Image (tube, rainbow, N blue to C red; front, side, top):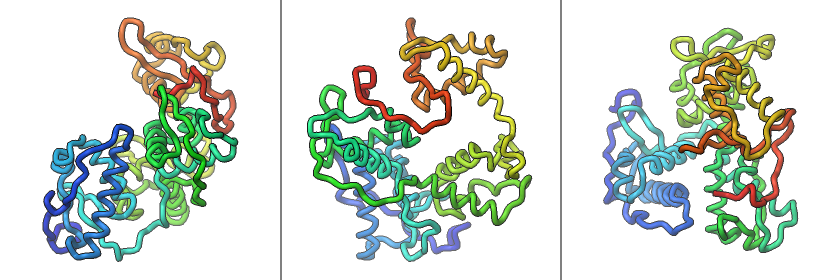
Length: 352
């Protein structure tokens, strides 16, 4: 029996068991997507024919990465997708093992971030009357509209290129075909669905002031990865349902009367910098240094750096190194909390 799982000790799946492997990638191919499709199909077929059994252990990330000549980070992303899709589960000090497909999932079929981005792009193309040969909106604009990382949107665009819908010319993505339809899927990411389920759980099981169970416990309860749990907690914290502090304090459930709680201090600084950009800057302007902002707002350089990083993740700032480097404005924040805007692609908004 494997301690903590209550299951028999199954064998480790070897690399030779997993032939044929993915060994080569086309120039515009998404490695994570290709490896995930291969590995998820292999798991399904191998379970059906009895080649592998539930709870068999997959090769380590390092071994598989070395064998198919990709980075461990790429394999880690693949394993995380497999875990969120219900194919595998990871245990500390044990590894990643095959889940029993007969076990009922705790959540309905979920939409991955990449699938969400693909459908948003396709819907945007159809609704705005794009014609073959037109340039599409920038990846950064799509990322802002969906709240998805730029890397996820680029993966989605790569998938659309693979399927023949888009092609790339001089760092611009152009519509190649309009012979497609949008899937009728719920435009919610896995993280958002987990956040919804967690919110219902909190409402039914916990009182204001109580401590939220650990991320490991929530991971088991909602049958997703630790990162997904952490991201869901961030969503609920921004909505004012939870308040997280480092160390022994953990994450505390807030009552309705606490939803107007005082922001983290760095969030106050972030708001100040956001307002500074709105009032004084244009796209392309260089911001004051971290040290100058720290003196301006009488705070630490660490707090300013955290605030700038958050604004960069939202697509408003970019950082460059070197003698003429610094922090530059990429877009102007909206003065009110309105929906993310779509931006037409022009010379100022080219994709990398």
